[in-house]
Image (tube, rainbow, N blue to C red; front, top):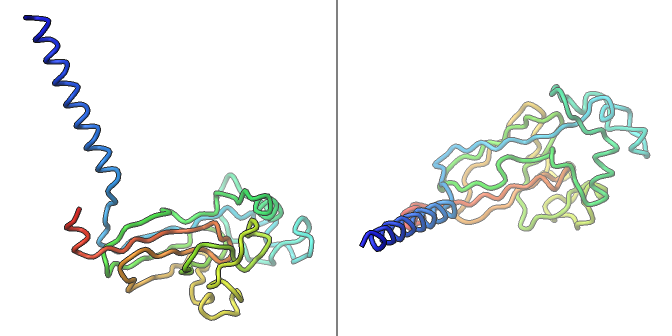
Length: 202
């Protein structure tokens, strides 16, 4: 009798644990819907000493020009040549990033992108993720159509975010939207826009 009772308790506990684990897994799969506004942060670790050197065909000798990189962060910083070397090898620097990478928002929510890095970025909507307008940083990927022309393309220029400034996105339609930096194309964000019906389904 005692053995049977113990077995029953162990079995019941196992069922409770399994149920709790399944509930946690289901909750993890559900995306948290943010009513808005939603903040996305652009990050980088540009090294002012190398990025701000005068331009030169050789990235190991040159940079982008004076005052381009305004990084004031202490600690790990990536020099200009290394950024290109790693991207060409197919290992772009993960310190150049949008955070978070994925967001789920209610339709009508405002997206606010804040550039907390040291150099300019873009937050450009694309149909499909791809490369940017600086070919050596593309890791062999073809350029995303929407990035073509660089800042000479007004649509790209409008999405530029200078260091310390912000860019706002409003009125996104229901569904999935892809955004990337057209300079550093591995910086990517997927925005899933849901309406009230989607929220009730959850």
